[in-house]
Length: 235
Image 1: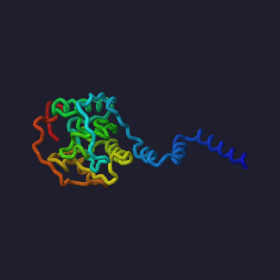
Image 2 (image 1 turned 90 degrees about the horizontal axis):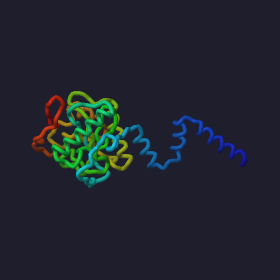
Image 3 (image 1 turned 90 degrees about the vertical axis):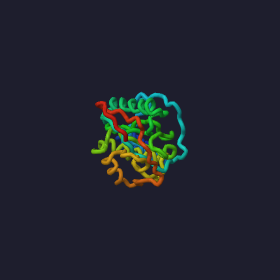
């Protein structure tokens, strides 16, 4: 009996060693703590690019969010050119950080994350830091901005998928409330951001919350964001 049990254990070990990564992974998941399993499943597939990966400058100052998990998540677009690979998106990240810090006078790039047309998620302020993205909601909400102008067309499928995974990942990590509401920038401030087409798209998502009661309307910044060809625009 004992010899038979030892044989079975050895056989399972050999099977796992020779199994495909998928099979071995599924077997291993049965013994993982629930939290780690949820995070692994929710965050798998996301290609995060850390600040060091895109060449970020150090922030002037850092403040933590006052609420966590956050009850709201905002979607923005940056305006300006899109990007479709790591090198170009990293350049756009540095461009927007310089603009936010040097022209707007902010402490850092305003968003929590930015998403490129390549489907990568570029870390700006990250999960835990207060932002400069949505007037009246910077200390109790997170925000992701798609790089580009999505007034007339949608981001790439990879980019849209990345946002959905980012939201699921944030919930699993305990950074976003499971009952969060999703909003466009225009739901809290007098802006057209994140563009008509992108806004119509996120309105169909399950957690969409629409216009907020706390709505701040003020004159847009006097210094618009520089765009290609010398033009300017304000989101």
